[in-house]
Image 1 (cartoon, one colour):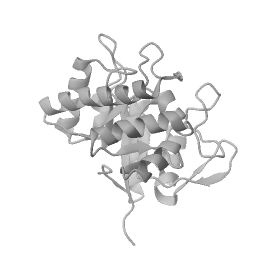
Image 2 (cartoon, one colour):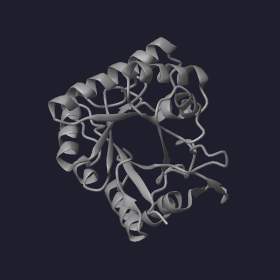
Image 3 (spheres, one colour):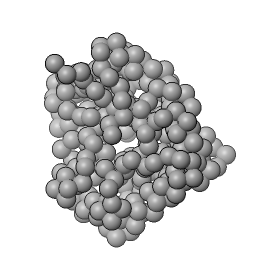
Length: 253
């Protein structure tokens, strides 16, 4: 029987100017992929470069964490953005991070949408098409997305590599989508609960919903949010639980 392998990713580089967000250095000692904000919801050039340098020094893989252009709302508000504009935003945000990565000897190995954009791409056909068009124009960059999402299916149909991911620190609904952040219990905070959910996803390919139902969730990567209170402790608990169960924690590609 082959060993179970899973990527552990976190959303990092989410500061802006003089305002830091989370402990990137500590998270980079635990995770295997860093989704680095690139100017849409957070991340100025200096913050991006610092996050890339730290990731490169740790040998951590990097994806571009693209978002709606919404610094004020931290990318957690839906924007009814024109498709062409959304395509250009994904290209521009990814391109900035790629330029910074070259300076630091790093490589952007994929694109992961953030926040409200990630949520919309589960069902929004027009916005999904706009993001896939950006990926097509960018070339050989995989998409990180939720299983069963419209954007994942559309990207795969276009021959774009898709890395499916689940969340250790978010609650799920019966249809496999995330419980909206505005609802109670949407973000899991206890280390035991978060680590147990990560282990179930990695080794059993399933997750317990907020209603107690077990649903399939087969993924190659598990996400932890760097801005969750106690994120570093949660990440350490997750990695320890996974490795204690014999799971190999390694970057998806």
